[in-house]
Length: 217
Image (cartoon, rainbow, N blue to C red; front, side, top):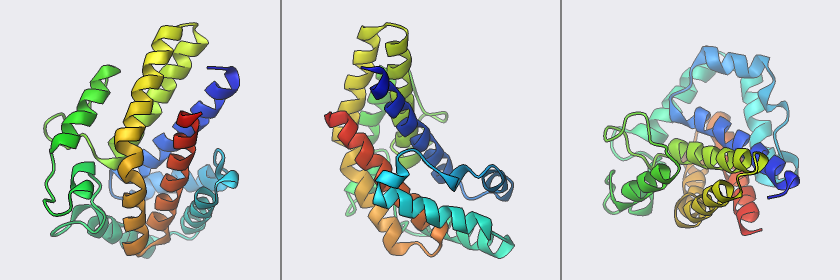
């Protein structure tokens, strides 16, 4: 892994971690206010080179700039309808549900497979056995963590550790995150009522496209 690859990977990991944070819980006004004040979405890694990612960045930046209590409440309603319910969520955030719509059950084989991938790099979800490991936010967090592990190992001269992290990440993308993440993002784009979640979905698509191309390279 050359230094250019390390830097590119770290930028992608940073974006994945940010997206995971956006999607993990319902919108919180104080935190979103800090994102707006810090101009986090004024520019994002490789977004200008990815049409989806750039379009999503623009939507979220504009939404944050005009966010008031009504907009925040609309985003919270969007979050519930898209990812929680009542009933089956419009854009199920769990891989096992999204890939097996007829069953719509969590904690299926995909959940166990991603849990095993996390363990290969010494990671696990915070509420193991209580929250499905294959939530889109957790999978994005794992992507970020795996990239950072590979980058840190490469910079420290640990070729073997870097190669292991890269191999685990490549397999994870091919078998899981890149297999269903685009479909999930399209469901969000179809059903979302707010630009906040439309933008987040577009950025996820851009992030996954970049990750898949980097992995292939």
